[in-house]
Image 1 (tube, rainbow, N blue to C red):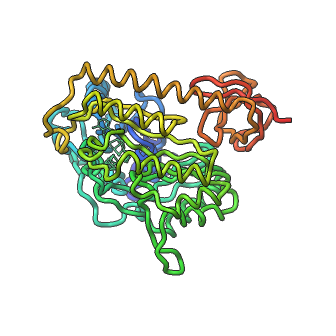
Image 2: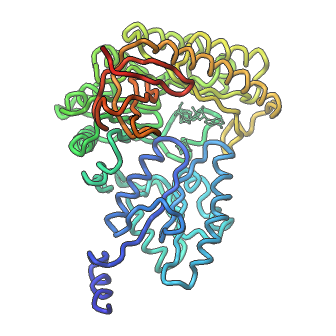
Image 3: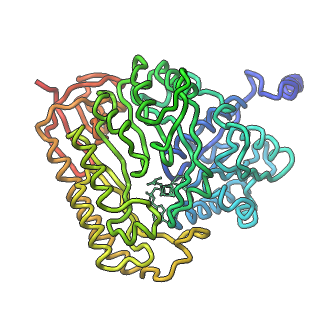
Length: 465
Ligand code: SAH
Ligand code: SF4
Ligand code: F3S
């Protein structure tokens, strides 16, 4: 036994037959947090941590948090309270528990988290995940660690690429971060403060990661960025390029069946990107383009840098080149100063856009943002009422879009088993979940089917022909 222990200590890594440590990661927030969680897991696997879904069985618990709305941040503290009790039960045993907070709450609140919840051993912001294994080790040996610097080095270059085995265990679709951070400073939003300034990952890194995903069996890649269409880079020949051109290069990789990207800002919706929707079959006909509000007065005070008409004209241009494109969005109701008339303008832009799918939120005052300082905050009851009306309209549009798919022949990428043994679930080009009979193919196949029934959130389909 003693010899085994020494070997572990000498190498700094567990020996092959040492019992591995387990990491449990809980993720809140946007797709970028989902991507970050998988990369943190990959980085920790190199240090001997295997993933577990069972909190009770974890040596290391990481809460990868979101700060976008008040409720999101509060959930973190209530979870920490419960996990503290588990940690206390494990104190003094041979498996003590280490607790870490990562993500946007970590970045925004820093050491305040440890002050408020003493059970926390490490607080790590999104820019320093490449240092995570080292920070965890330090927290275990030397006590609480906080790292919320905006690192000077390129974190992506320092993160290990996920191995084929790791990717295979996750499925046929994958996220790939190409851009991070935001310089737009919408007056309601914390993201520019939690994710820092806009940075684009280099072209070569993106192509390499995409190829390794495809080699491991991934068929659909969703490019991620807080403002993904602000991505820009230099191609191997030295010319400047933007997201549209990157998509053409990715489309050439053998084995990529489907490409998507999220989230876009109207201001960066340039001609090159619109042309990519016209030219590339593998670029799915789906565009998530949030507008947030329909009144020009509110858009201005949100600092969105475009008008309602400008937004609608972008949507028109995209629909002209790709008539079957599904439009999705995000809306906020009850931003400071929003009158009944302003809210009607939001309803109006929703009618003009006709969304296939759209998220809607009540404005949530975020500390440190200009919106929190504004007068004319809207009463909670008014926000509730507006949100209910908006949601009803959006549900109607979503149902109408789903119903319009019935009878259509569509391609579905099969992703997982269904609830019933004889069913598989895949996605339509427009991102709806589609339930198909399992004899039509296996996970990873793209099958051609006819849609037979539409529900609010999914479609049912049968073999085509
Ligand atoms: N970068 C994206 C979205 C980032 S956050 C964009 O520019 O559109 C995701 C969504 O959360 C936003 O689109 C917005 O609708 C919502 N959101 C952000 N801050 C919010 C706040 N303070 N209150 C309510 N909703 C908010
Ligand atoms: Fe937030 Fe606006 Fe940046 Fe989107 S563009 S992340 S809403 S500040
Ligand atoms: Fe939330 Fe941070 Fe994403 S605040 S929405 S996890 S960028």
